[in-house]
Image (cartoon, rainbow, N blue to C red; front, top):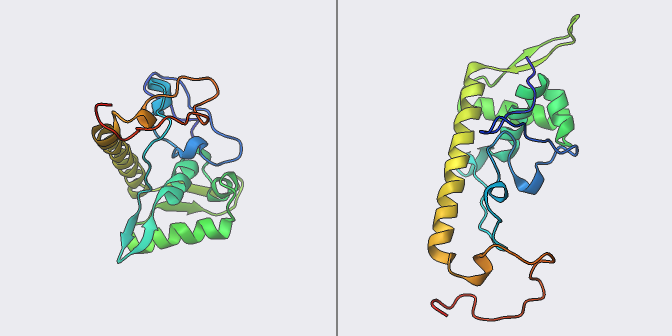
Length: 178
């Protein structure tokens, strides 16, 4: 069953970019952006989290986004289209993740009067929810570490100027107590 846009903690719906790419590299189906809580610093730390086996990536942001979109649309084909990805590539990514993880992520329905489609299995739903929580916690830890090590640096402060501070040539960003 396809669902509408996920709701945030306040009960509002997240807007979905038409292009299919998450805005600001934000993963689909995740909570509020930092910028909705406080102005973001001009320079931020970033990361990409993957599950891998012997160095070979088998589940990461792209596969996670596919699962979220399949859950929302009820179709791997539609999910791939929204991400600007070929159906074949999306199918291979799902198959690779299923093979390596040893669990079935999607249940596929062939044609018929309803036209077929895909739904997340219970294992697929659990993986999507766990990966979402894992990413959220990794984001929070990274933000905490960034504040710990760079919080007093001028580049880590919220950008208050309307044009940004690209023209700021002041020095001493890394000097403590300056």
